[in-house]
Length: 252
Picture 1 (cartoon, rainbow, N blue to C red):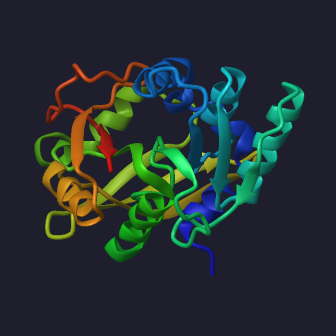
Picture 2 (tube, rainbow, N blue to C red; picture 1 turned 60 degrees about the vertical axis):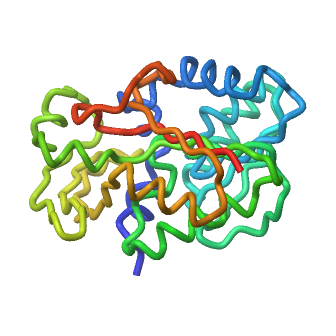
């Protein structure tokens, strides 16, 4: 039986590229370049690359990027977009909980919830962080975004999604469990064939202190956490309860 995140992305590549939360690619890649000191010799692994928006843009800027995703549908769209741009990018179907890479990359990026924190257990989410860590060279950098656990403690998840005025997928939070920090919601969306589908979803929100502890346990020496503004990541953006997502930058 497929999990909800597998069903959602099966046939959603074209529609996914229209979602409001994927429109900040250029600014996000500007930030990544700055973090890498514009060193185009850096090898980058894009976990949960989806339709390849960051991998394609970074490759156009001269970086060597490998994109991995669990969804063949998303990868198909990524390959089509790369081919149209005349780019050769390895887009591989891999499960982020079980990656084959060992100390092969200078940088790992995992943006827009690229797999983490969508898994059905905390142990599975941790495996994604562990595999990302193992893919990095000894002094590598890990840049990712995840759901900010401070947000639902002070604000309504449904009101946030209502404000987005997004024509894409629609989210209705049914319960938020304070003991597990998990939001159970119903996601309604239209796939690439025009069919409207409804899925029962389960997403994990993380507190900054949890992320710090998890990454320290994996050997990261410096861990910085900021607010994650769409298309405008910045080290000056102090994390606030109003931030729906947080940006994490960890160095081994």
